[in-house]
Amino acid sequence: MASLYRSAQRMAHESPVVFWSLAIGFAGPIMVLTVPPIRKSFGYKQAERIPTTFPVPNRPRRAVTGYEDP
Image (cartoon, rainbow, N blue to C red; front, side, top):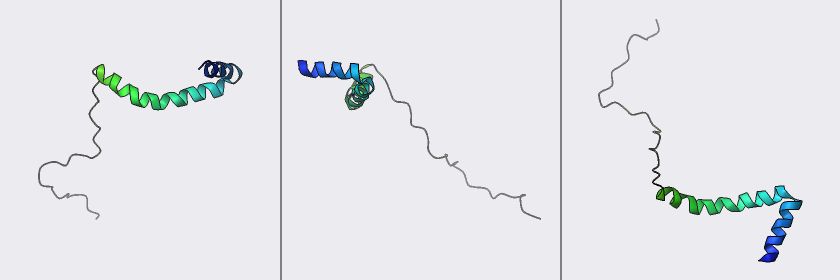
């Protein structure tokens, strides 16, 4: 375990871009598993879904008149 810490410390010092890329890359899947239960425990409720279709009125359709070509 000490060698893992020492190698991570060395990598953070010598090539910080690679170190932080790996750190963020490994944090993503972990957050997928941990964040939703934490949000639920704080009482977060998801917003309503955005409608994807326009609601059709509940009446018979009228024919359009007055826009014919002369």
